Amino acid sequence: QVQLVESGGGLVQAGGSLRLSCAASGRTYTSYALGWFRQAPGKEREFVAAINWNGGSTTYADSVRGRFTISRDGTKNTMYLQMNSLQPEDTAVYYCALRWRGNLETQTNKYDLWGQGTQVTVSS
Image (cartoon, rainbow, N blue to C red; front, side, top):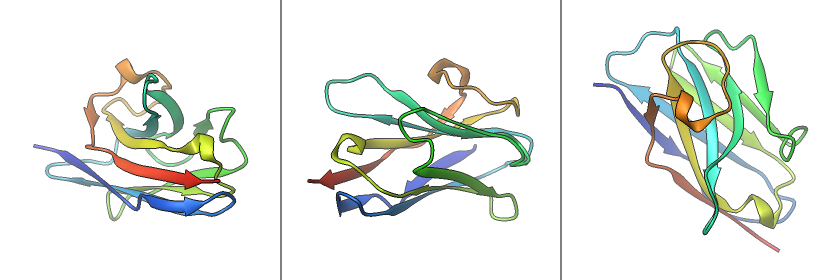
């Protein structure tokens, strides 16, 4: 049984930074892709960033490109999202997701496993 556990959320002022982590536990292997999604109150879950199985390819939503950086450490089965220049519109619950096929995808229905989410709140 594989589980994803996010951490690192919190309250930050506009312009600040946070780093989210997503740890995969259980029987894992490295040939999977990972992604970050977020969901604000009253809105649908939306794609933020994704990274392929070996970390060689990444993709970002236009709204976060240049401010957020996704990365992964295969030795730790952990993925990160470094978020800089945070704005109030970044406020949401952030979820990490795993896709057993290692290619990049931006759609929620392409991912096989989800974490429980971590709250990020950006005050103005």
